[in-house]
Length: 485
Ligand code: GLU
Image 1: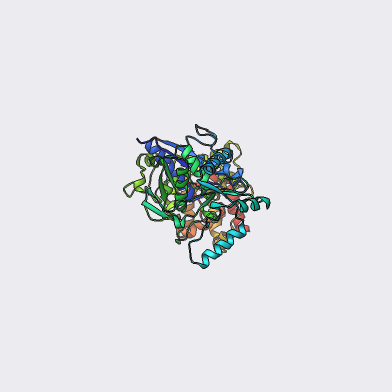
Image 2 (image 1 turned 90 degrees about the vertical axis):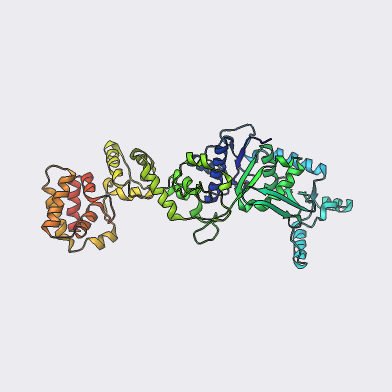
């Protein structure tokens, strides 16, 4: 009988979640939503030296920001609470004690030097490295000696001879020969559990039906299955595994946590929208069945199946993500862009104080809405409207404000000061007739110095609209200033 679907996302946040983690979380979430099952969020924090509260909170925040709402986990609780492994240590200790009592596991007293010596010997003899089974049958004398030396034993799982075969929903049957899966540690000498014990116990106790996770964990699967066996789980109740292929960097190197560019926080700070990240990662290794590039979270939950996850590594393509981000920004209503841009204005140090500033910002956004790729570009585009201490970008100044531009700026100043009714059409007409007709200039030559003088940059929102928003007084001030200095 098939059990109700329960999938889990189980990160060990030793830093910010990265692209690979989030793709896993997204596929877990989508699979749960597609099947009407539950999405469980579990924090694997048994290594509290590396997993800090700060990283845990950041992981929670990132999932929320992306809209990957979990049904059970931190903050929301659930029938298998607690969902932080550091709060479940007794459970792992109990199971380890049962495994010892049943003879599935044993105490191993070997110290690091002995393990190292055995590894060296294996290397010389050209046999697969791994624990040699020395403490499987320990003599009474040895035991007394180790105990008198004060050695603290680890708990080691006994791996029987043979092999483990399991079905992986992405790669089919996978077999591991136990010659390459030596007896492994479940509990350290200090009593703390290892990942393999905690993950397997929790997947069983939380009744997880599907384990979608990164390919890097494929080789840990036979060990987890060994723990299920020791827990007397029936094979039909094992979760179905689906190991997602790696996400490679653009140069085909493996994306690594050390590379800041892969952390989701990095993208967030640079003004990528959560829906663009989800859209992009959805298609990075999964296909909805056609060439569709724009997919909503709703569509993803409707269409997501494991069968459509590819077997080959996916290559991360920044250009594609940027294109999707631009599309998603264009698809947002202006009010929404304004709302989402506010934190970026704040971190760029541009204060929008007062209704007037807010209204001005609301009028500026439509001017750039179509052209921006990320929200983080907004402050630079509109800074000229809000800054008290206006300054021209030095490079733009050097290139565009030369001696040749002085007559242009002077003519623009005269034309602008003659405008009586401050309207877009009037501004455009005045400048065109003064510069294009009056000075017989090409538009680019005429308007670049004006643009640099009034906006401070060579790239800006459309010029006449920018001038209209800036107002007559400030425009004239800046045209004058550009001629003098
Ligand atoms: N906690 C593990 C990690 O972050 C993943 C656990 C799993 O999905 O099995 O690497």
